[in-house]
Length: 67
Image (cartoon, rainbow, N blue to C red; front, side, top):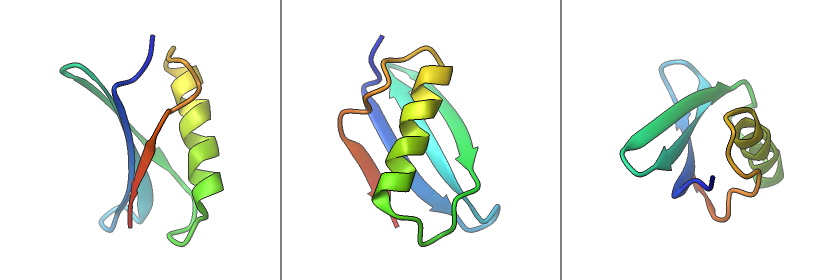
């Protein structure tokens, strides 16, 4: 199964990165403890692992990062 959209954004309230995986109407949200200035490669690695853990294909295709 492939995710339709994968997006990472900084949550200032929790001071963590929030990863949103969208497939149709379903949205899975997971937090990452990476630093606010984390590199794109770090966030992509987290996204790939989270996709694997949730049963999706591990390649996020296009990871959107909102800083």
